[in-house]
Length: 121
Image (cartoon, rainbow, N blue to C red; front, side):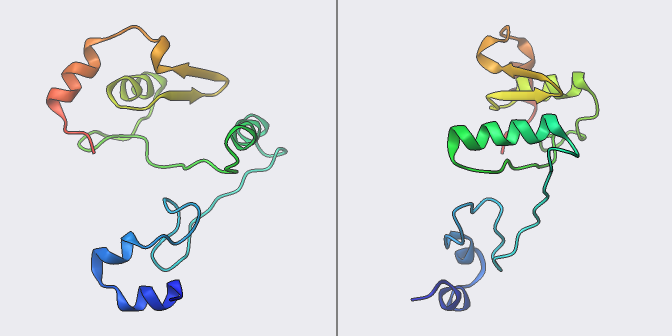
């Protein structure tokens, strides 16, 4: 059965269970996606980061989403970014030309206090 036909037969949350593309996290239930592109000319550092990710994984894109967790405001500074990074299950954080690996950061109470304060998604 074709996916389009299957989508018409499914209702509500069942539509979310249908694999719509090789990148389901960015493909909406109607098969659309809000993609953004970047060229080497416009942002060489970001372009090279995405290209390096592609070379390692075979996936030519990264997902850009709001940088915050439920109940907190959006990240607006490097300090906010580091705090959010340390409080969540992210493995890496890239800020400008810096790459932070969670395994190489000092253990901190920040994450433990946060886990008691906010339920992670």
